Image (cartoon, rainbow, N blue to C red; front, side, top):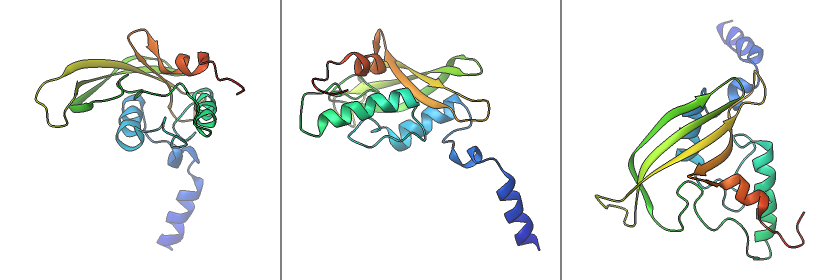
Length: 162
C-alpha cells in the first residue's frame, strides 16, 4: 500500500519538478557550470537548461562547424579566453532578479596553469530567463564586460547559414 501511495504522489507532481537543473538562479548557474560547462561545444548543450533563443543560436553555430567553417565559438564563453583554467573558489551571487529574468554574477580567477596560485580575477554575468511561472530557470547569455556571448552568436556572419 505504501508503495502505491508513493507512486501516486510522484505521478501528481508537476513534470517541471524533475526537469529543472536548479531551484533558483544561483543553483541553476552552479549546476550548468559544474555539469555542463561545455554546453557551447558541438551539440553538447540541451534545451533542458538553455533558453530557446540561445539554443537556436547554438544550433546555427553547430551547423556551421559541421563542414569545418570558421564559426563564432572559438573561446570559452565562461572566461572569454581560448586557454586557461578557472581556479577555485568560484563565487556566485544574484545581481538582479524578477519573476521572469535574473542575472547571476560568477567570479573566479583565471590562470594559465591548472595548479597556479595566482591569476587574473574575472567576473561574468550569467543571464537567465524564467519563461513561465511553473517553468525552470534557463541560461540565456553570458556577459563579460561589454561582450555578450549571445549577441556574438546572433551577429556572426554565417555564410550560407540561416
